[in-house]
Each structure stands twice: as structure tokens, then as C-alpha cells.
Image (cartoon, rainbow, N blue to C red; front, top):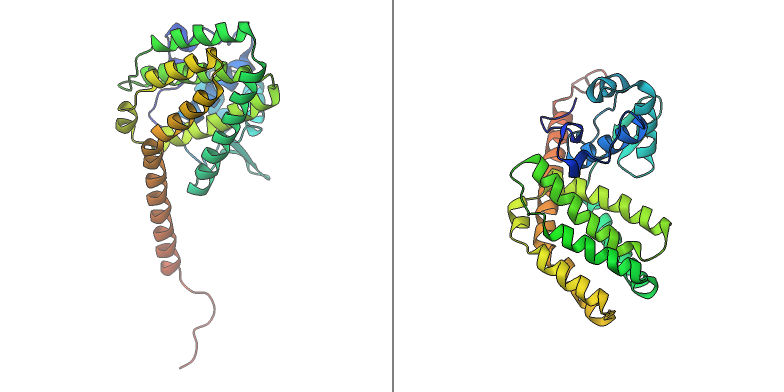
Amino acid sequence: MPTDLPSVATFTAPALSGFVDVERNPTQAVHYWLRRDIVRGVFRPMERLKIAELVDFYKVGHSPVREAILLLTTGGLVVHEHQKGHRVAPVSLADYTDLVGVYRRIYRLMLKMALDHGDDAWEEAVVVQLHRSLKVPKLFDSPEHRETWQLAYGGLHHTLLSGCGSPLLMRIWTDLGNRIERYINLFADYDVDLGLDHHSKHREIVDALVKRDAPRLETLVRDFFEMGTSFHQTVTNTLATVEQDDIAEDDEAVAATPKRGRPRKK
């Protein structure tokens, strides 16, 4: 069953719950709750997603839970095992490294497309979203504060990239972002993240975007990614330690397993 972290379904702040209506669309509600709860680490890697337990956990019917799980299999957060049902996707250092590399390449491509094709309405939406995000303090002292910051951060970048005009790329970027965010929530050192000035970087990026200054925007995005290097390194370091510990435990288990067959005659 889930960890001690509270589910997003229990959050009461309008910014975190106002857009979810479980009465009108229970499948959509469960899909959102379960996705965010997996991303936040409420459900651990490789944890079995049992229908009956989720029905009780979210206080909804069986059908919405089944549909939500199936929807999540397309985004890489849930995996299906033949004749065993569904589990939360596993984690690995190789997967995280691959995700970050692909995410950054797609981000640059989409931002260039947005700069080329985005209209005045898109520019206005970006400025409005920046203003909203700047009003959200970067606090991690409670699960709700952390979720509020992560949604504001993600909302700004979603608006920035939406000018690319490609729903397919937006879906790919969203899925990659959710998967990376899960690794961050599970393995990152948030003390390092608190020392990074995202607000200032966001202001500079939006300013270059509004001025359609492509060379400066490219430089700012490169600097933005480099600024997060130390933070992402905390994830890779923790993952490397976890994998080394798992290998050591496996070796110990193999060594402790009695060998089969008849003993050889001396």
C-alpha cells in the first residue's frame, strides 16, 4: 500500500483541487490523483496497483480505477505484467540519464518551434503564466507547498512550449516531464534545489522570448539546464548508491541459497 505521504486527493487548496470534479468525471479525477501520487512517490517503484485497494484509497468505483490505470500505462508511469496485473514503473540510473537527455533535446526543439510559430495570444499567455508563477513561493516545508511549486513550475514551462503548435510533441514532453519529476521526488536532495534561483531565470527566458531574441534565448536555456546540474547530480548519486546496494543484496542472497543436486562424492 502507499507510503505515509498524503495523496493529492486530500489536498484542499483551490490551486491543487479546484479543477478536479470526482462527481462529474470520476475517471478523470482518479487518473489525475493516481498520476500525481505516483509522480510524488506516494506509490513506490514496482508497487502492485490493486484495484480493490485503490477503490478504497480514493473512494471511487472499480471502473474509474481500471480506466485510470490503463491510461497511465501509455505514459511510462505504470507497467503491465502478463497475468499479474499492473505495477508502478521501475526506476534505474540508465533510465533517468536517458530521460534527462531526451527531455532537454525535445525542450530545445519545441521552444525553437514556439519562437517561430507562436502568436501574440501565446506571448500574452506566457507573460500571464510567468506573473502567476512568480507569486508562488519556493517552499518544500509541506507536501502541499511542494506540490503548489511543482505545478506552478510545470505550468509555466507548459505554456512556454505550447506555442510549438504540436499536440504530439506536447504529449511526449509531458510524459517525459512526469517521469523525470518522479525521480526527483524519490531521490533528489531538495536542499540543493532550494538554493537555485528559478524565478530570475524564468524572467530572463520570458523576456528573451517576448523580444524574439533567438540567440539569447538559446544561451539562457543552456544556462538554465546547467544551473540544474548539481541538483540532478544528487539524483544520479542516490540512484547509483541504491543500485549498488541492490546488487550487494542480490549477491548475498545468491550466496545464501543452498545448492541443488546431490553432493559430490569425495
